Image (cartoon, rainbow, N blue to C red; front, side):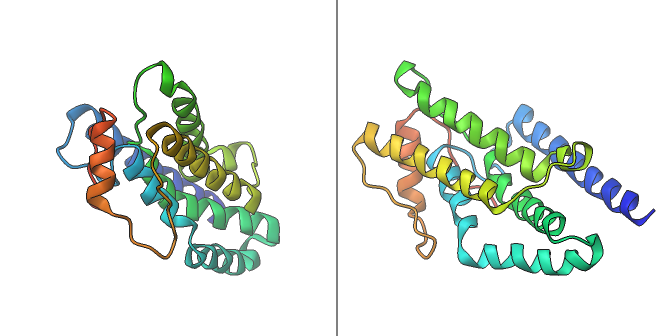
Length: 187
């Protein structure tokens, strides 16, 4: 009964977030909640790969392993909880138009779909998907592949370091040059 209650609560939280996202998307709030643009969203998402966040995943794993009874399932749930916060920055991620940006758009779509499914999807409950740290690493790799592609196309030298605060104004300027409508968001 507890498991059903916990799963139902998670489903309700995810539905509320989804409807908030739809309202923001279709009624075009001036400021997004978690950021909008390409580099803005990549920078905010990439911050969630810091060592502190991986400590949080391990804390979830330790706390949940006694509840769940198995370490793999507890780690998966910890990853899902981590992705729930991290993937919020992927709701309003955008990619530039034009044929030359097709590869970037495909990678952005893959990152968005994978991240949101991991953090906000219900497949881990309905299909018994067990996430591992390799899945988190794949999200990091995709993020860095997109950044590398943008760097190469625009002849930039951008790097997202976990210990460094991003230059918000510069990221917004670059996103605007790409024809996007960025903003840093509230979170």
